[in-house]
Length: 185
Ligand SMILES: Cc1cc2nc3c(=O)[nH]c(=O)nc-3n(C[C@H](O)[C@H](O)[C@H](O)COP(=O)(O)O)c2cc1C
Image (cartoon, rainbow, N blue to C red; front, side, top):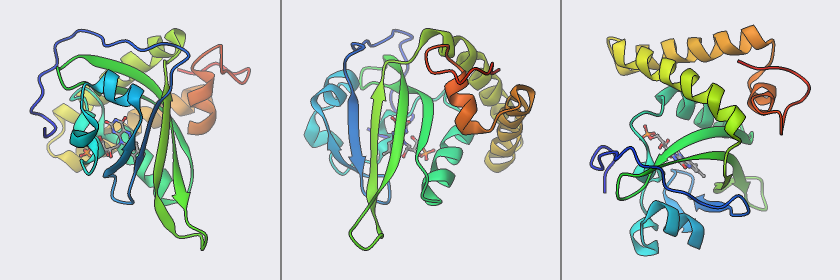
Protein backbone atom coordinates (compact mmCIF):
# COMPACT_ATOMS: atom_id res chain seq x y z
CA UNK A 1 0.00 0.00 0.00
CA UNK A 2 1.77 3.17 -1.15
CA UNK A 3 1.04 6.60 0.33
CA UNK A 4 -1.65 8.26 -1.72
CA UNK A 5 -3.34 4.95 -2.55
CA UNK A 6 -5.60 5.02 0.51
CA UNK A 7 -8.44 7.56 0.33
CA UNK A 8 -9.37 9.20 3.65
CA UNK A 9 -12.90 8.40 4.80
CA UNK A 10 -13.15 11.29 7.27
CA UNK A 11 -13.97 8.77 10.02
CA UNK A 12 -11.82 8.62 13.16
CA UNK A 13 -10.24 5.34 14.27
CA UNK A 14 -10.03 5.16 18.06
CA UNK A 15 -7.67 3.71 20.61
CA UNK A 16 -7.70 3.90 24.38
CA UNK A 17 -5.92 6.41 26.57
CA UNK A 18 -4.04 3.65 28.37
CA UNK A 19 -2.71 2.18 25.10
CA UNK A 20 0.60 2.84 23.37
CA UNK A 21 1.10 2.47 19.62
CA UNK A 22 4.70 1.29 19.23
CA UNK A 23 6.92 0.86 16.21
CA UNK A 24 10.60 0.53 15.43
CA UNK A 25 12.37 1.16 12.13
CA UNK A 26 15.75 0.62 10.54
CA UNK A 27 17.88 3.73 9.81
CA UNK A 28 15.97 4.29 6.55
CA UNK A 29 12.58 4.36 8.27
CA UNK A 30 11.51 0.85 7.23
CA UNK A 31 9.39 -0.80 9.88
CA UNK A 32 11.10 -3.58 11.87
CA UNK A 33 8.55 -3.84 14.70
CA UNK A 34 4.89 -2.91 15.18
CA UNK A 35 3.03 -3.84 18.34
CA UNK A 36 -0.48 -5.30 18.45
CA UNK A 37 -2.05 -1.88 19.08
CA UNK A 38 -0.30 -0.48 15.97
CA UNK A 39 -1.61 -3.39 13.90
CA UNK A 40 -5.15 -3.07 15.24
CA UNK A 41 -5.46 0.72 14.89
CA UNK A 42 -3.75 0.94 11.48
CA UNK A 43 -5.57 -2.13 10.18
CA UNK A 44 -2.38 -3.62 8.71
CA UNK A 45 -1.21 -7.16 9.50
CA UNK A 46 2.30 -7.54 10.88
CA UNK A 47 3.47 -9.15 7.62
CA UNK A 48 2.31 -6.09 5.66
CA UNK A 49 4.10 -3.71 8.01
CA UNK A 50 7.49 -5.40 8.42
CA UNK A 51 9.87 -3.99 5.83
CA UNK A 52 7.39 -1.33 4.70
CA UNK A 53 8.39 2.36 4.80
CA UNK A 54 6.80 4.16 7.76
CA UNK A 55 4.99 6.52 5.40
CA UNK A 56 2.59 3.60 4.77
CA UNK A 57 0.34 5.38 7.32
CA UNK A 58 1.05 8.94 6.12
CA UNK A 59 -2.08 11.10 5.93
CA UNK A 60 -2.28 13.54 2.97
CA UNK A 61 -3.26 16.41 5.30
CA UNK A 62 -0.01 16.15 7.30
CA UNK A 63 2.40 18.98 6.42
CA UNK A 64 5.65 17.69 4.93
CA UNK A 65 7.45 20.31 7.04
CA UNK A 66 6.55 18.39 10.22
CA UNK A 67 8.27 15.28 8.88
CA UNK A 68 11.26 17.37 7.80
CA UNK A 69 11.54 18.66 11.36
CA UNK A 70 11.26 15.07 12.63
CA UNK A 71 14.01 13.74 10.36
CA UNK A 72 16.27 16.79 10.90
CA UNK A 73 16.12 16.26 14.64
CA UNK A 74 16.55 12.51 14.49
CA UNK A 75 19.49 13.03 12.12
CA UNK A 76 21.08 15.30 14.72
CA UNK A 77 20.68 12.54 17.32
CA UNK A 78 17.78 14.16 19.17
CA UNK A 79 14.44 12.75 20.30
CA UNK A 80 11.28 14.41 18.96
CA UNK A 81 7.74 14.83 20.25
CA UNK A 82 5.08 15.65 17.67
CA UNK A 83 1.35 15.56 17.06
CA UNK A 84 0.77 13.42 13.96
CA UNK A 85 -2.35 12.58 11.94
CA UNK A 86 -2.18 9.03 10.61
CA UNK A 87 -4.16 7.12 7.99
CA UNK A 88 -5.36 3.55 8.59
CA UNK A 89 -5.56 0.91 5.87
CA UNK A 90 -9.30 1.51 5.42
CA UNK A 91 -8.91 5.30 5.15
CA UNK A 92 -9.92 6.14 8.72
CA UNK A 93 -7.68 8.67 10.48
CA UNK A 94 -6.24 8.88 13.96
CA UNK A 95 -4.32 11.61 15.74
CA UNK A 96 -1.41 10.62 17.96
CA UNK A 97 1.05 12.34 20.27
CA UNK A 98 4.30 10.70 19.19
CA UNK A 99 7.70 10.39 20.81
CA UNK A 100 10.39 9.27 18.37
CA UNK A 101 13.98 8.48 19.32
CA UNK A 102 17.14 7.24 17.61
CA UNK A 103 18.32 3.81 18.76
CA UNK A 104 22.10 3.51 19.08
CA UNK A 105 24.28 0.41 19.06
CA UNK A 106 27.03 -0.30 21.60
CA UNK A 107 29.47 1.86 19.60
CA UNK A 108 27.11 4.80 19.38
CA UNK A 109 26.24 4.06 15.74
CA UNK A 110 22.69 4.43 14.48
CA UNK A 111 20.79 1.14 14.74
CA UNK A 112 17.35 2.54 13.87
CA UNK A 113 14.49 4.48 15.41
CA UNK A 114 11.77 3.83 17.96
CA UNK A 115 8.41 5.51 18.43
CA UNK A 116 5.71 5.42 21.10
CA UNK A 117 2.40 7.16 20.51
CA UNK A 118 -0.51 7.86 22.77
CA UNK A 119 -3.94 9.47 22.48
CA UNK A 120 -3.33 13.22 22.06
CA UNK A 121 -4.69 15.83 24.44
CA UNK A 122 -7.85 17.45 23.06
CA UNK A 123 -6.83 20.98 24.07
CA UNK A 124 -3.56 20.59 22.15
CA UNK A 125 -5.36 19.30 19.06
CA UNK A 126 -7.53 22.41 19.02
CA UNK A 127 -4.33 24.37 18.34
CA UNK A 128 -2.53 21.80 16.20
CA UNK A 129 -5.38 21.24 13.72
CA UNK A 130 -5.53 24.88 12.49
CA UNK A 131 -1.74 25.23 12.60
CA UNK A 132 -1.17 22.13 10.45
CA UNK A 133 -4.05 23.14 8.15
CA UNK A 134 -2.36 26.48 7.52
CA UNK A 135 1.00 24.77 6.96
CA UNK A 136 -0.55 22.27 4.54
CA UNK A 137 -2.39 25.03 2.65
CA UNK A 138 0.87 26.94 2.25
CA UNK A 139 2.57 23.78 0.95
CA UNK A 140 -0.21 23.19 -1.59
CA UNK A 141 -0.02 26.77 -2.89
CA UNK A 142 3.77 26.68 -3.30
CA UNK A 143 5.33 26.33 -6.74
CA UNK A 144 7.28 23.22 -5.72
CA UNK A 145 7.71 20.75 -2.87
CA UNK A 146 10.82 22.34 -1.35
CA UNK A 147 9.47 25.87 -1.48
CA UNK A 148 6.28 24.60 0.14
CA UNK A 149 8.12 22.94 2.97
CA UNK A 150 10.18 26.07 3.58
CA UNK A 151 7.05 28.24 3.63
CA UNK A 152 5.29 25.82 6.00
CA UNK A 153 8.37 25.78 8.20
CA UNK A 154 8.12 29.56 8.34
CA UNK A 155 4.46 29.27 9.46
CA UNK A 156 5.55 26.95 12.28
CA UNK A 157 8.45 29.26 13.18
CA UNK A 158 5.97 32.15 13.35
CA UNK A 159 3.89 30.22 15.88
CA UNK A 160 7.02 29.50 17.93
CA UNK A 161 8.06 33.15 17.80
CA UNK A 162 4.60 34.33 18.89
CA UNK A 163 4.71 31.89 21.80
CA UNK A 164 8.32 32.84 22.58
CA UNK A 165 9.22 29.14 22.79
CA UNK A 166 11.51 26.73 21.02
CA UNK A 167 9.86 23.71 19.39
CA UNK A 168 10.48 21.33 22.30
CA UNK A 169 8.81 23.65 24.80
CA UNK A 170 6.08 24.65 22.35
CA UNK A 171 4.92 21.07 21.76
CA UNK A 172 4.41 20.56 25.50
CA UNK A 173 2.91 24.01 26.07
CA UNK A 174 0.15 23.09 23.58
CA UNK A 175 -1.75 21.22 26.31
CA UNK A 176 -2.55 22.26 29.86
CA UNK A 177 -1.80 18.62 30.75
CA UNK A 178 1.80 18.84 29.57
CA UNK A 179 2.28 22.63 29.69
CA UNK A 180 5.35 24.19 31.19
CA UNK A 181 3.47 27.21 32.45
CA UNK A 182 3.63 28.89 29.06
CA UNK A 183 0.91 29.41 26.48
CA UNK A 184 1.50 28.31 22.91
CA UNK A 185 -0.15 29.07 19.56
C1 LIG B 1 10.29 5.63 14.26
C2 LIG B 1 9.53 6.42 13.25
C3 LIG B 1 8.17 6.56 13.37
C4 LIG B 1 7.41 7.26 12.44
N1 LIG B 1 6.07 7.34 12.62
C5 LIG B 1 5.32 7.93 11.66
C6 LIG B 1 3.90 7.94 11.78
O1 LIG B 1 3.30 7.48 12.77
N2 LIG B 1 3.19 8.51 10.76
C7 LIG B 1 3.79 9.04 9.66
O2 LIG B 1 3.09 9.53 8.76
N3 LIG B 1 5.14 9.08 9.55
C8 LIG B 1 5.90 8.52 10.52
N4 LIG B 1 7.27 8.54 10.39
C9 LIG B 1 7.88 9.33 9.29
C10 LIG B 1 7.88 8.58 7.98
O3 LIG B 1 9.06 7.83 7.90
C11 LIG B 1 7.82 9.56 6.78
O4 LIG B 1 8.89 10.46 6.82
C12 LIG B 1 6.50 10.37 6.74
O5 LIG B 1 5.39 9.51 6.75
C13 LIG B 1 6.42 11.28 5.51
O6 LIG B 1 6.50 10.54 4.35
P1 LIG B 1 7.56 10.96 3.23
O7 LIG B 1 8.89 11.10 3.96
O8 LIG B 1 7.52 9.88 2.25
O9 LIG B 1 7.06 12.26 2.71
C14 LIG B 1 8.06 7.86 11.33
C15 LIG B 1 9.44 7.74 11.19
C16 LIG B 1 10.18 7.05 12.14
C17 LIG B 1 11.67 6.94 11.99
